[in-house]
Image 1: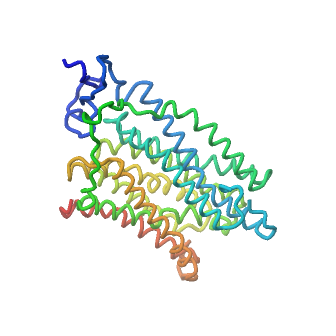
Image 2: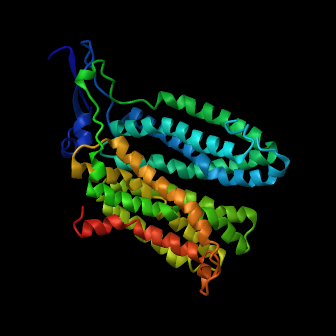
Image 3: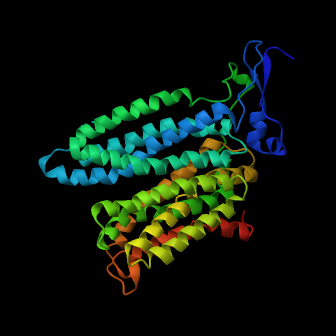
Amino acid sequence: MNSANIELSIQSAPTPQDTTTPDADWNSQHQFDLGDSTEFALPPVDRGKDAWGFLAAAFTIECLVWGFPFAYGIFQTTTVRTSHSQDLETLPSLAHNVTHLIVTQGVFYAIGGGLVYSPVIQFMDEWFVRRKGLAFGVMWAGTGIGGVLIPLLLEYLLNNHGFRTTLRIWSIILFLLTAPLLYFLKPRLPIPQSQSSFTRRFDLSFLKDRTFLILQAGNVLEGLGYFVPSIYLPTIATRLGASSSVSSLTVILLNIASVFGCVAMGSIIDRWHVTTCILVSTIGSTGSIFLVWGLSTSLPPLFVFCVMYGLFAGSFSSTYPGIRMAVQESVGRADVSMVLALLSAGRGIGNVICGPASEGLARLGVWRAAGTYGTEYGPLVLFTGISAALGGVGVLGRRVGWM
């Protein structure tokens, strides 16, 4: 064997899947010019302390970085309370107006989070092959955990220390908790010294692929109404007689349920076709919206809806590894990070539209109907249900042979 070219092989028994999936084939054997004659073995995929250490660090990053936006409602309340005294606290603890907050908490935070998050997505493909869906599901479950714990912490800090001090304390906490994770967030494959031996493909041809377009359409449509319940559930619970602490339980239940939903969906996406998984999410979320939320007249059924919606709608993003695999099977190799990035962007488009759309629907007035349908939130229930149902457009596309 040429000493300048070292063959890197996965330390696991070969299986049929290792040689048939693009990721397994690329990970299991590749020639790198390392510039020396030292032969060594890579850590195994799907198992071992290195793989699970990486996944634990990825889960924590997801929890800390993307759990924070779930606390924006708490900041909104504080902002309104202190706006008359000009006590708005840069980046964003020194902000003095709403524009500063949008630029810092919105744009700058999103850019920083993306810079941390993108390598994690890329490296996940190197550490997990046969359990890739489960790994992504576990990682994305971190958002649900963060969405429960971080708002509680920030609410305590805001009540005792104010807006500016809270953000500075959180910045310190975020740095101290994430900095040690860099040791675990490392690639499995070494970077070759000679770029002639390895060139990463940057292929966007999948943008014209019908499979990607259909599944992306469902992703965007599902995102249109996804955040509506988390925005309005506390208010609806208050109207049903719940106290402030009990009304906040609606969002807590939703986020906790989404943790289990993401892990469960991640485990079945490795076994079932992606459209089957999307169908499960669509039926569960649509049914809970129309039959439970829409007909709720008291707190118990409203809490049942929170759990059901978190389980089924909260797990939709865990279908992304399956969507990516379907796209790869349709067009051949595609840039993995770009497929996932565009899926996240598509969901973001729906989320952005959701705000003004839901605000306009809430002003349509009261309907003559039973349950939540008979309140000013009736149009929101209908909008959210239709959005969830349209998220399953990929199922129809596969049924009629479009993908």
